[in-house]
Image (spheres, helix red, strand yellow):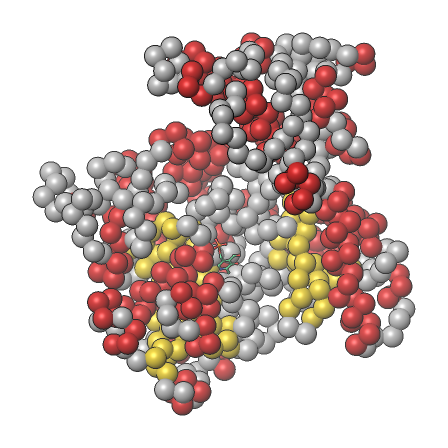
Amino acid sequence: MNPTETLDTTSEILPGGDTKNDLLWRTSGPESSCSENREHRGKPAPCHRHCDFSSIYSKDLLPNPDGEGPTQRFLQALVHILLAHVSSTFDRTCKVLDFHHPHQLMEGLDGFSLELPDQPENLEQLLVDCRDTLKYGVKTGHPRFFNQLSSGLDVIGMAGEWLTSTANTNMFTFEISPVFILMEDVMLKKMREKVGWSPEEGDGLFCPGGSMSNLYSILLARYKFFPEVKLRGMAAIPKLALFTSEHSHYSIRKAAGVLGMGVENVFLVKCNERCADICRLCKPAVAPQQGLVPFYVSATAGTTVYGAFDPLGDIADVCESHGLWMHVDAAWGGGLLMSKKHAGKLRGIERAASVTWNPHKMMGVPLQCSAILVRQKGLLQECNQLCAEYLFQPDKHYDVTYDTGDKSIQCGRHVDVFKLWLMWKAKGSEGFGSQINCCLENAEYLFNKLENRADFELVFKTKPEHSNVCFWYIPDSLRAAPRGPEWNRKLHEVAPKVKAKMIEEGIVMVGYQPLGEKANFFRCVFSNPATSREDVDLLVDEIARLGHDL
Ligand SMILES: Cc1ncc(COP(=O)(O)O)c(C=O)c1O
């Protein structure tokens, strides 16, 4: 997009009804009829679109005394761009992405440059930059985006995020976030109830992502058993051993490294077909032999690749009998607690000492939104508090137990709760439940469909527990060939090749990976309520179209 164009898309109607802007936006293929290109065709544009921002600069906006009008017009123009993006996100004639290689983006495209200037640029350029930033990004809310656990574009959640940015406050004290602090309190209580703890039991925090929530769980467990570590450090306590399954998220091992316990001291328990094999968990002899003290087990409720649920009740038995801290990483599976139909898959979670739950995954809340829930009240505060007097003055005139900032390992903390709170109000618990049921129904639909196709093979022959469906595409050339190491080597190359073509075309997006001995396979995950069965059909047809001649 040329930065010298104004943003008025209706001013120049070209033969055939296209606007000048339509042409600038047009790309080849399915995108050509996309709403991004049809913006306001034949309709009067809102008056703010006629504004010329080319001689207006940020200094002309508020707090400039004459800045009210330009500020309003600028923000309206921006909202217009955002709304166009929202519409095109749900428009199946638009691509999921318009792929460019890193060097192409770095070099600059059509007036879109990532370089930072010394002199201020005008607001026209800034609006073009905003539009191009979205244009060259990925529409993670598109009904055909199956690539990541977090997907979807919830309009209410997005409105919540907009409001949060506008409020631009910090979660460390009640003093500056009175409403958000109380909302967080209410929300965490509600989430703990869903876990199965009594309403008055427990504590928690929203923090930046599931990896951080998992790190908190290890930090708390270590403090619980060895409180002296806070002041005297690792030299004052024994060497520790942690246990999790080989299919757990890598953040457990990463946190052990960050916390100075050593990545190697995380023992990865073998899995049976899908989930942690409990028989192998019983306080392995290896830890004491190496002079390590076992103290912590992380069970996974919804593994990242397979979507499997570890046997939480059995793991709780082991933890109780050996006095170990039981954490449940329900970053992905926690959303199922909202569904009456599927919550039973997490039975036993109520016996955990801590739980990670990411509403930004299965519940479709805009990134980021992740909670660490802790069963013992007060532990977060004891473990992390340092009582900085410039923030947490004890003699404030309100109840300072609402100054929750010292529970956190951060100082400043983003407001992550509001968008979830607003979505919960909009849907109710039941609405979230139905949304999750639909995602799991889509997964079952895909599973059933692939079961009946000769050109696909499922990684598991049994129905998915969560919304992950793992499968191989078997091109014609491999279908009749004898199986063996060479066949596997060739199969390993299929998914990356299909994915490369898929990304270039941009119509659909799905992830792949190897796991253990298994050659690269596709992992389709459903967390986007906009996805329909037709989108699932299209995904399967696309993979077959892109891969059949490999
Ligand atoms: C089971 C599990 N735990 C933790 C995480 C990490 O979450 P985040 O990406 O929010 O740090 C993931 C991410 O995929 C996950 O699948």
